[in-house]
Each structure stands twice: as C-alpha cells, then as structure tokens.
Length: 71
Image (cartoon, helix red, strand yellow):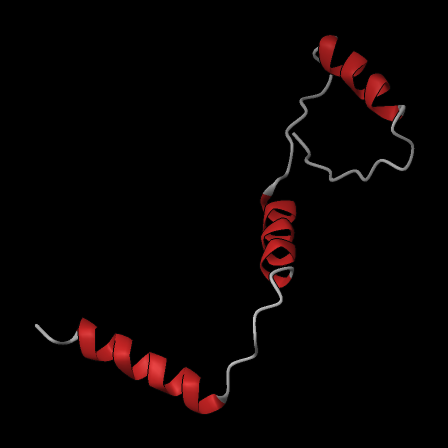
C-alpha cells in the first residue's frame, strides 16, 4: 500500500474521491494534526495579550519551579 498526501484545489474533486472510496479503491483519512495546531495558534494570537518582558517570564518560570520542587 502506498500513502499519498493530496491537496484539493477544486472542492468538487472530493466527490470524485468519495466515489473511489465507495468502490473500495482508496481509503480517505483526514489529516488534522497540522490544521488543529494552526487553528490553536491563530486562536491564541487573536487575544492580543500584552508582551511579557524577559524579567516577567523568568519570574514566572522561577515561581513554577519553586512550586514543582517544593516537595
């Protein structure tokens, strides 16, 4: 079996591919890993949160480390 990644230019092509799948000639599996990650990044970037300074980032890291290794 050979696996190919196909990018559809014309949305009508999905009907053709679905027909091939109905004939058991191909199997269609949606690849969501890339799109899920891109959607997450887009969502996070849309919040317009203030940019943290290096000092603020280091303080947060130190706080997390303090709590993690407190045991």
